[in-house]
Amino acid sequence: SGSDEIAELAQDFNKMVEAVSANIQTIQKASEEKETFINNLTHELKTPITAIKGYSAFLNHANSTEEDRRMAIDYIHEHVARLDLLSGKLMELLYLKNEEITLQPVDIEALFAYVEQMEQHMLQAKRITLVKECLENRIYGDPTLLQTLFMNLLENSIKASPTEGEIHLKSYSRHPGIVIEVMDYGKGIPEKDIENIAEAFYVVDKSRSRELGGIGLGLSICSQIARLHHAQMQIESKEHEYTKVSVLFTTPLQLEH
Image 1: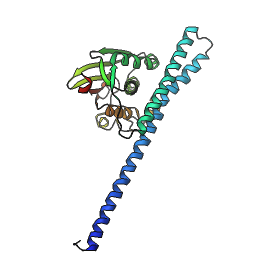
Image 2 (image 1 turned 90 degrees about the vertical axis):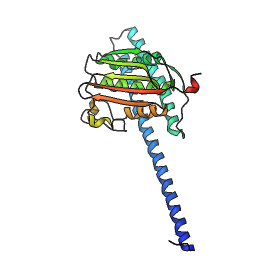
Image 3 (image 1 turned 60 degrees about the vertical axis):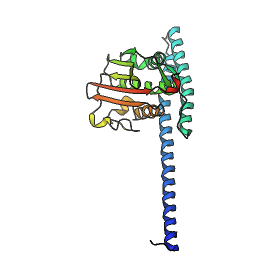
Image 4 (image 1 turned 180 degrees about the horizontal axis):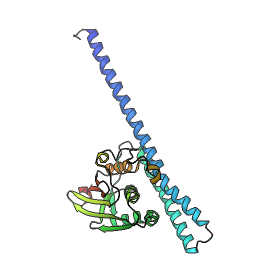
């Protein structure tokens, strides 16, 4: 302390220590974010790879018809194309310093149709009815990332729903933008877990996570994608009754004109 040269040197030294400490924290945070994106990428690649393996095995089935074989080949092609798009997009996000995306008009009906098509095998396996209601038909965002967002939400609903259950996929207007909502009537989420459910690797029911094919990354990915779109994701749930995930997209004024 004081005003002599030793005091000034001490003050400068303390400032240097604070600056170095801040830089270390910044580097650690950047490293953690990159690791999270790599884990998310691994998770996202798992679904199409599993589908490709399944349909490839189906093609070797002796009793399959020519129509069934064409259907399997089409699904394999769809998932391979998705792997190409998705891996590239997530790797872009991994190295994107300012974490910005280019917003463009997205047709919600087409988005719903794509998500339903890509999750058709899971819906059919549990004989679940997907009820789609499109009261608003345009949002702005990155089409590939939005597909990933709602495929993850739909997959979560399918896993939580009982056999022959029902899931609702709906878009509607709500100030100050447009909401896309996914709602199921399955096992729900305990109230104590809702606050943490979007954290990476957080699993509500660890004893059943392997059985259901979840490792706690799906909602973390959804949360990141929503944030990149400047959207708000809200989760409402009552255990053993329902879960509703709402994503509110605020329409950019500059794209309205």
